[in-house]
Image (cartoon, rainbow, N blue to C red; front, side, top):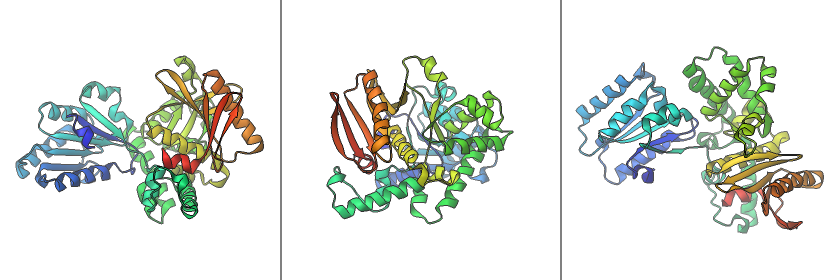
Length: 398
């Protein structure tokens, strides 16, 4: 976060709850003090603490004034406001403090609304931010005491076998930091799901049909890596279309589910086509759906989606007669086509290549990528280059 702080702007830290936002803040505070900053010049406020009572801007102002009066910081203080989105109108207090240049400000929230249009208008040009996701596979390996290096394929056979085993654990239980370290994984993940639904959506928006919201969330997490239509979901749950759209937005805003659009140069066509749904975490998804081995191909695709999402790339799927899982767009247009599958033999290979070739032909992409369980090669097909790479290698080296 040092580089972000160096901009002189408000630093915003967003992401699903329990992904590590608070830990990131506390680690940064420790680093500041290790470099000589007195403890009195740091203020960390956990706004989820029930002892605060009703959260409001006057409360934030009272906390600030009490801090200045009692601790009398000698340097410009570093102020960390954790889960700030719980305070109605928080941006007015933060903007005022920033404009008076009285503090170095860091705010976190478990809602994408932290930087939505209504807040962006108040903080335009005053903030820089980052999104914290559950652990990537490389980070998960480090939690398990394994460091791959830049060329994981050159690792000894025993180490490669260990990495492959850890990948299966990663697919089954996901990347939430605490879950990676403890034994009661399913219980913790079930509680995470309930917390996101209850605290970040139901309580915040006063949802009057909480059972329908939970059913919708379960439906989406069970249907990962599949195209979904809000119209069809409406019939499945028996609720109005506008409620489906609103609930889906809330789930996305809370970082629980993501909806990837079909690529088209027409924005209208992007909006009307079905979207593919993905979960923030495969472990969370497996806990809710109680399925794992029979959905391994979907889990492969979900972790590839999350890896691409962390990279900041603009991601779509594409479909004509056949489907291509991921189409990566740059400023010049689609530039990379990626297909993901578990088993890459026989009919599966033929089907996956058809979708890949259609996308490559449509958008004049010369090189395609296929990610699967254990096939590594480079082949030429009709003047086009296709690279095949094992999932664990692809996740480990980029």
